Length: 247
Ligand SMILES: [Mg+2]
Image 1 (cartoon, rainbow, N blue to C red):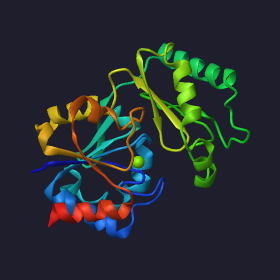
Image 2: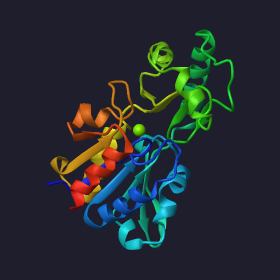
Image 3: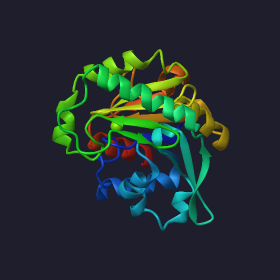
């Protein structure tokens, strides 16, 4: 009954920042022969290349069914004429970026929430999304996982900045990050876009993910569009689900 399978990337198809593993690669390729597949993540496009695309880059028959949506789906790439091309891309204006960054920096300083040890620059401009990574995106998992396991620090920041950023989406993501996009440019917006592009009906889409909370960047498609979802607890669950789909 489903025609489009939407996957979150980290902890659903791969470990965080990890390569797609051989079993998942072969299942994923087979899935692409039968379904349209959309992969979303808060990472930028280059990270998709590292984790997934390098394993299937040369197969154009498969790639025509794959839609890549980096930075919480504020960008969409499709494979056409032998290369990955941007289908949509909604940049912030310079003024918007400066405003968001100054509001964020102010909140982090005022709330005394700057971690004692950081590894790199905390606020990253991804053109369509500003990402705050409390420690650093590439910091070791063990360090990131103990920074804010109950989300309290980031929800405090979110509460503090929400009035100054009321025309934006402020969403908390895994481990240690906060993502800011335009108010209406969230994953629900892109599911709608995707339906327009592919002519696939809402009831023919299923969203596979590892974690969803009301403040989470994966939540809007569920909240606004009532997309069917499948929760996975580990990569094995995703593999099992793909096996069901392709048999
Ligand atoms: Mg995930």
